[in-house]
Length: 153
Image (cartoon, rainbow, N blue to C red):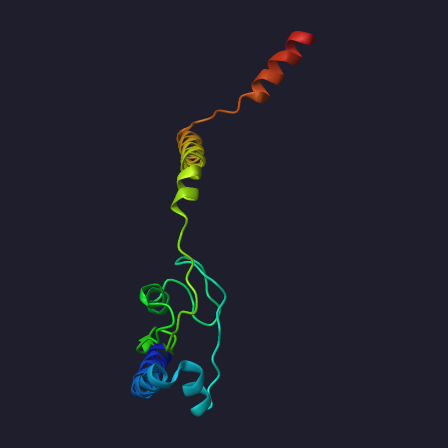
């Protein structure tokens, strides 16, 4: 356990050391642009594919502070450094597609029906599992076969 704790502490300290550097980079990116600041620092800007709040984003992860910051950031604005458990990110949202609430309202009944069917199937499976676990079954096949053989002879 000790090596794991040491590794975690070392990672946390490394992230702590990155925060002032990331803040300096973020300030420069806010004034001169992300691409220019990255070129000046000899860093590479990585562009992620379009994503939703719940999807895994390569290079960033899933359900972390950076994903939340991306959805709170105005388009084309450069973020302050965002620290996650895996790294420190400076973000810029290039494009945002708003959810189509009309399309969602059209399919909400179907979505509800599918979810209800899933829940019903889950409850039936749970019931059957409980019945199987609580059932006491006596195997009387040998006695039945023996009585049938006596009756035949």
